[in-house]
Image (cartoon, rainbow, N blue to C red; front, side):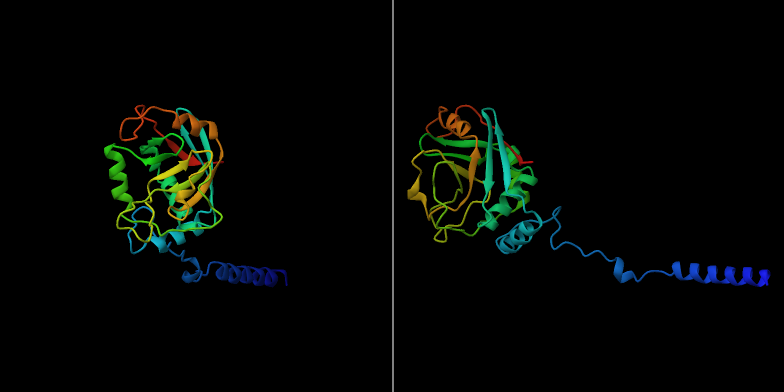
Length: 222
């Protein structure tokens, strides 16, 4: 009897192992590909809304810090301007802004960043894509002191599309409300107003370009 029992148990074990070694359904192991390949995607006028909507869903961050030789500016990006928030976060993660400067300074008005005369900046723009962002106007978002907004061209731009690469902060303590409804406000400074004011006090040439290069580094806030 004991021999029979051993043979039966051995047979059962073989059968169980056989079941365990059965190849899983290959369909269950398929990992869906992302909608866009971030290593190769180029943003265009045709895919800009779809891409930024998708990217924003995958990347919910809304706090960044901008470092320069005068200190650090902490910024909050608004959830209610999802395309602009997603675009800014995308450029931060691409390290685009780290090739740029605060390149325009107008005391008691604005401090503008996101561009430079460096070849690498133009190369990065070309690699990222040629596109504009649809305006996202929210009535409660005004050009108050410390507001973050997108630069744009005024000529031949009736839809008030935003330049995706350049931004500015309102430095006038009374605001710049003549720009309300003209440029998309998509964030605000939460700390570092003293840094903003120091930048605004720098001497410039006739083209409003600071005589001192103010290189910036933009990263996600922890």
